[in-house]
Structure formats: C-alpha cells, structure tokens
Length: 137
Image 1 (cartoon, rainbow, N blue to C red):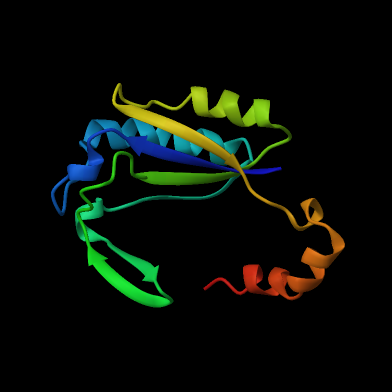
Image 2 (cartoon, rainbow, N blue to C red):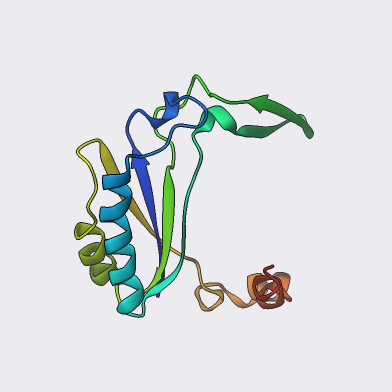
C-alpha cells in the first residue's frame, strides 16, 4: 500500500521567497529520511519552496487563470512530502509519528489510489496509466 505523507508547516503560507529550514532541522530530517530508506519503504521525497514562489492555475468558465503566490486565502500549505510503500495505514502512521517534526508542523497521511481500487469501467477509461507512471524522467 502506498501512502503520501504531506508535511504541513504552520506559517509557511506566508514565508518569504527563498525561506530555508535551519541546518539542524535538515540534519534531523535526513536521519529520519535515511531510516525510511533503510527500512525499504521510501519511494521518493521532496521539500517544496514556499507558496510565495509558486503559482496557481484556476479554471473559471473553462479558461485558465494564473495567480502568483503568495495566496492570501491559504491557511495550510504543503512544505514537502514523502511517498512510502508499507503494509498498512497503521504502519504509515507509525512511521509518521517517528518524524522529527517541529511544534508548528503537521503530517497528513493519504493513501494512494491503486488501479485495483477502481471498478472495471474506470480501469478501462484509465488504460495506459501504468505506462504514464513509468514514463517519469
């Protein structure tokens, strides 16, 4: 079962462009990341620049509208993520609880939809999806 663990740092929605975590926090997180790798459950992970450096594309009346960050209406934003492959939701929770997160950080865990979760008509509509997943750069 694949799960995405999303890091949600409170206050990151208002972080200035180029905001970086302190070296001590990165060192602690690297230790945790290596534990995930050594356990054989880590698929991928990344940290994200603050929303002030991002853009959002909304679709109003079928037309794309580009809005530069920061986004005033945002209350929670993603600061980074891990994709892990574990045997159960409980195992994903156990790994998230081991994260050296700061007091202002929350981890949201979301199970990834697998093709086996869908009915036959959706599987048919998604023909070729596996090839798209493997087509990563």
